[in-house]
Image (cartoon, rainbow over all chains, first blue to last red; front, side, top):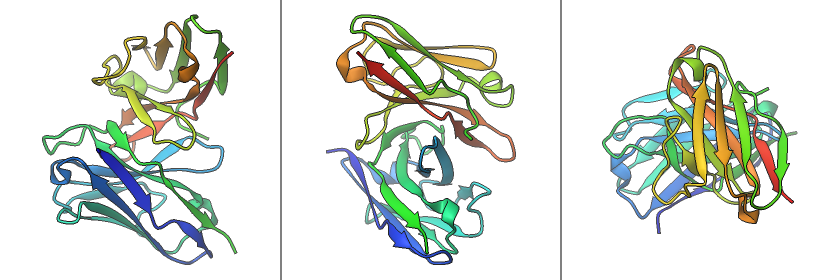
Length: 123
Length: 112
């Protein structure tokens, strides 16, 4: 089955760290750019990070730049999001998503999403 | 506050048609033909239903269609069905600051 499954969310204090994982199955992971998108309570989704097919090129939204790091392990079929110096405003459901381009291009169209993992930052 | 503006909710009866609008600026919707629409049933993974303004992915019903005029994109749904009840999000490519996408705040569709 083609799917993405996020894990690693939970409750963390401000200033703390979490590492999210997104394990994929059912397709050739190494062909696709991958993205992290989050959705705060009562808000629309917000793009926060992307990584190319090899894991060598990454970009971040200003709101997380310098605090979050995206990486991937093509052998394990997993993309990660290391989140440091967490703030209250990082509280959200975090989704990983796949680019629809299977030719190693970044189209910014997300044709496959996971169900998300909830991160709560609170003291 | 989301970058793109959508109505918070719409409703219709089975069999009717419905249109959801998504308003941005010349820096996003108006500047590129890279508008996508996603359907989200709570607790499930969001689903791509329209990309590049008018294109439907394989397997998506032809009851869903997209269009754009100026800085506003629209999602139309014909022959409403109860399973269409969901939250719909628009997104658009933009190069403001860096290349990325922005989303709307979502429209909750109720099929009465």
